[in-house]
Image 1 (cartoon, one colour):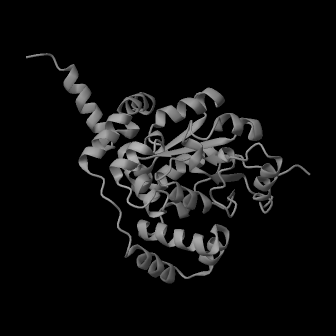
Image 2: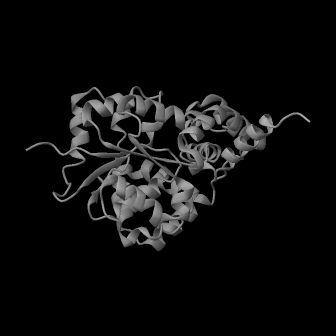
Image 3: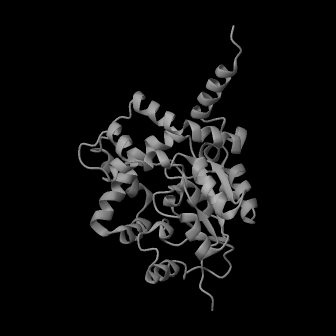
Length: 296
């Protein structure tokens, strides 16, 4: 019997509502995700180890026979070039899977990425946002969406990645999910009409980080699945009460914008009006218009 492998990957972007997309897509009866939402196999340091491949395949052993979409969602897959030739690795193991990439205003995404990394203690004590953006190149790279798309198009061909916009998913979940469903070859469902209730994001990160350190990620997820929503919300709020995230000031945000502006211009050429709602795109468009105005 052939081994079950994923036929669909959500490749990111980190802090661009990938968890929301994972949750919404997972509501469909013909879609199946493994318990480990983000295995990050194709960016793992031990990718070349045959045992790592077997561990990855083990994640999909519980997949039901009637699943049409067998998927996983790992945001490291759109942080090229920091984790090796991710598209080439995917091609070698999975052939031509469906690829889904959800994007968010690049400056807002980078700021949220910093907050996430700070709360989950990926930075040393005393880290400021200014220093983080100077020393952690992935904060910027993960917001250079055109760069990521170029790499996947080079490996899989133009049009091989289905691009979604996080802000549009929040505004029109039914419409955006229906478009994704069409791409994936699955019918629209009523459960796509509304998104899940909002959560305290900082509290969620802090609570998960503490539980991971105490129980380990796998056991933490199993325990979380058994807790009532009200109890989990109280834990998240309590965990966030002592979390003080450094501010990202205007000067740092300006440096982020300048670092992604050229990539954003290329992305605008690729996606057109789909990203016109982003403040960063609006700023870019206004600057271009001003440059093209004839001199008085």
